[in-house]
Image (cartoon, rainbow, N blue to C red):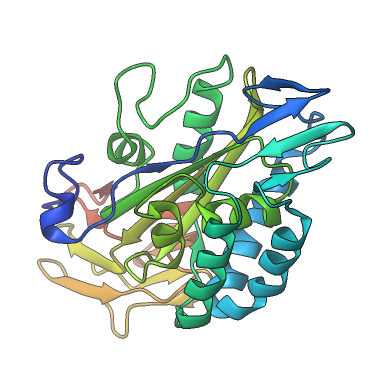
Length: 311
């Protein structure tokens, strides 16, 4: 299968109007009058809770952009005339922003105009790519390039994500899912507001987040986005008919697939990763597979009546 990569890693982003990888640096903080790169937050007890909350908040603001305006107004009210937030990163710790109140006011205006977009489906394989990059940055690395030189698209491919478009946001030091999303929407110091653009892009179908400790900023959260094909190609090269192909308890074959035939099937949301049961009949025992990644895949019954999955 041909995989179309619409990201030549920054070479044609402007010309095509596509989204570059977007990385948010930590906010400058000042503790007791001494500027520091960041105030290291308390260790999050449960990274999975933070990852889940990010995805919930992200879908919340995608479906109802105006719901975040009160949060932005509260942030604006907490700022002094120079855009500093007293105790914004803990007791006696003041956040120093780059653009000050102007960035928050601009974000409020942007959300007033922003149309709602569809929620994204959570994907464990997309999250796997995000988690791997978060772990890779634990010792203080920042940015989208992995320690092995990988880019976000390569990491998604390694995780088995059959994407046609992809993007990545990274947040450092944000303590809650809501704060992660809010910081990315304000996008202080980022002229093109690339993080906000990624959050509201209608190009994605799936998302996943991975968070963990970070030596410099306390924590790091990587959010990956992907447009995943909903198509599954089923090919029967075997000696018997494929009687049924059950995905999440539902037979997606309207009729048995005879030897020598193939069929293109559009999967429904929730069927990209699901338990699968293959039934050949004629004395063959059913084959049960757990959480098979099906979207964008080719499932083939081989000449020896074995089963292969390729992407």
